[in-house]
Length: 106
Length: 179
Image 1: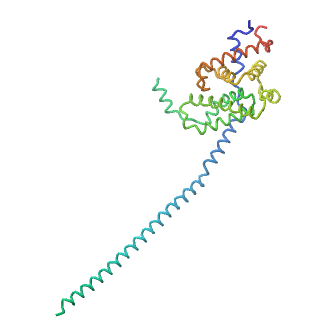
Image 2: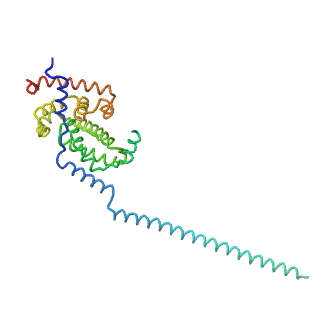
Image 3: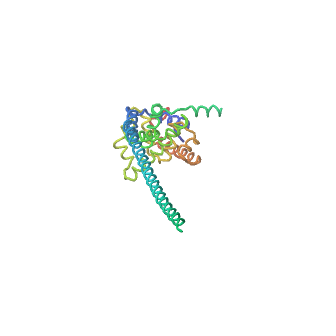
């Protein structure tokens, strides 16, 4: 029925479908494309360093500003408390003086 | 044995350049036989290796790298063929017109004819035959590579082989052994 024995045909097929060599320069193209992609996704070291420094400066600056603001608000609150205490002390003294004067009256 | 295999997996460190060296012929050949277009096959090979680079951390062993490359190459080749169909290009007419000579550079006359006949087979049969006879995979391995049931792969192999043999009988009389 067939001029080809199954095994012969399959052997011929195997021989005919051996791997072919990759084109010259394929590896170089792949490595070049890889370098390009890496450069796009990972900026140069100095860019990364600059970005890190900038980010650190922004975070540190923000933290320092917040600390300063908190200190200022704390100082303001302390002054208000002291003023309130002074006023209260003065009022108490006045009240004390009035009571003493009242006690001295015949 | 299992311990040794696990140990090898643990100590295996993928080297991208070495993987390209070792597998570029396999990836290119698979893509070429699926698309029958050297330019497209080269593009596919580049894409596959770029994807490997992104996926490298998840590659566990040399065998895994080989399996992964075969699988992705077949998938990318199928995608490329579908894109060409969507664009309305008759791939095989184009092959005959433009790429036939390129496709078969330095191949024997028999290999040239076999590849031409292979290119006329349905894509699923072609994929199964290429993995079987180029890569020497078993039906189980082909099924894993193509993510298809083993029975389907066996059917594609049988039908593809039958079809190819019938074409060979009518077209390859001059190559018949002992003729």
